[in-house]
Length: 356
Ligand SMILES: [Zn+2]
Image (tube, rainbow, N blue to C red; front, side):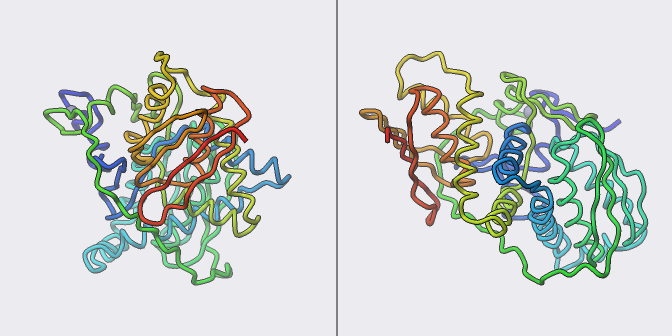
């Protein structure tokens, strides 16, 4: 019997093993230094990917796979290089192989990607994973493909079939695949220190809000935000940004604008209005869950004459956050509204929403 949850707050132990909640609006991974993660709604990410596909009239899953592949490759390479490559030496031992992929399966379940099972594995040749209640299959397939390529140190290809209840992902080695040796440069975010202090569990020291806010079904690989009853996933920021970058390179700069539009539409239509009447207090409340979700730290919020200005430290994605703030504005103050933002160059951005 493995103890799976904290005896005091009930939070699954793996959450503590996998990530650290910092006081600057960031959540960082423990397995690989500098990995930042974020929690997003499953249907929010689906909405953005499907929305881009619809707007350009093209299925973008191939591009999503490619972005995720690069991110999975970079993450697994970093993992394998730990201890001056000792981790890779051990992991690539034939006897350890099954354990390595069981770890990948477990970690994906813990991240809320669904109930994954390792169906078949032949070292460096073939991998079959079955998933019940899968999160976006293109994201999963690309990520696992990148991990397999890093592990076996050779190119492979991925395919999947199924529907939104059950998917089988198959990865086969493919020496003929041409891979540019372009490596993803992990963007090391400048982390500005914050002073956001959370109430923590006395036993496991994790924020108490986590166990209040989320319900984790470890067997099914499903995490739910209790107050909205929405499913969430924990994704690496590098992998989300790798997909956005891939989309921009393939489809052009208007992708950034589409992400802002789609995210603001999603937020506008799915926001539960806070009970407070005063508008600037309401914005504070709407923006307050960014920290626990690892999206960044909103340090200044001001509203004057229909102009909303927000300073966000350590933003996880400029487009997603600009869209988010715009969506809250539309939900609370109505339309028309337009958004402008300053690029994150030194660890912070300003988002301004006003009447056009
Ligand atoms: Zn606890």
